[in-house]
Amino acid sequence: MSDTAALRPGVVLGHYPQREDARRPVVDALAGDVAGFFRQALAGRRAGHERFLALVQQETAALEPLADVQLKALVPALRRELYSDGLKDPLVARAFAMVRVVAGRRLGMRHFDVQLIGGKVMLEGRIAEMETGEGKTLTATLPACVMALAGIPVQIVTVNDFLVQRDAAWMMPLYKFFGLSVGTIVEDSNPQQRVRAYASDITYCTNKQLVFDYLKDRIVVGREARAAAQAGSGTIVGQAQRSAQLLLRGL
Image 1 (tube, rainbow, N blue to C red):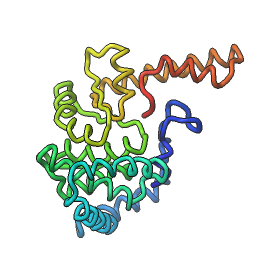
Image 2 (cartoon, one colour):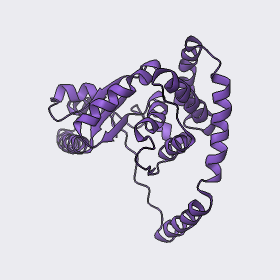
Image 3 (cartoon, rainbow, N blue to C red):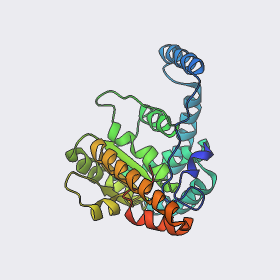
C-alpha cells in the first residue's frame, strides 16, 4: 500500500489531500463479499493477516529487550522510511510492534492479536467491526501512529465530546513517545482552535464536528476557485488564499 503514503499535503496533491472513492464493479463487489463472508466464517482470519501477525511477533521479540532510550532512537528512522517507502507490510509490522511495546510500558496495555488485525484492516482502507470490550480505543492507536509518522493527516472520530477528550488524554503518553502532536475538536472550539487542532499529527473529534468543518472547507474551496477563475489569478496565489481559510489540512 505504498500509494497510501502519497496522501500527504504537498506539491503534488496540494494542501488538502483526499483519497478518491474507488468503486468496484457490482459483480466483483458481491463476489468478494460472499467469498469473504464464508472465509471469515470458516477461518476467522485472512491468511494474509496470519502472515502479518507473524511479522509483528518477530519484530516485537526483537524490540522488547531494548530500553526506552534505545526504542526512541529508532523512531526517526522509522518515520523516514514510512514517509519515503509507504505502508509496506514489513514497515507497518515494525511500527505496530513498536507501538505495542511502548503501549505496554506507557499505558499498561498491550495490543492483542485481534487488535493488531483491526489496525491492519483499517490501514487497508476497510472497516473493522469490534465488539464492546475488544479495545477499539487502543486499536485505533496502531493505524493512527503509523499514518501520522508517514506524514498523513489523521482524524480519529468518536461520538461525543467526553470521549474525544478522554481518549486523547488517555492515549497521549503513547503519542508523546513517538513525538506526535495531538489536537481535540469539541462543540465550543473556535475557528482558531480548530485550525491548530487539525494541524496536529492526530486529531480527535466527533462525527458531527468533522462533517460540518469539512463542509465549510468545501464551500471555501468552491468560492475561492470561482474567484480565482474570474480574476485569472495564479495557482500558487489561489492555493495560498484557500489554505489561509481552511480548517482541515486533509481528510
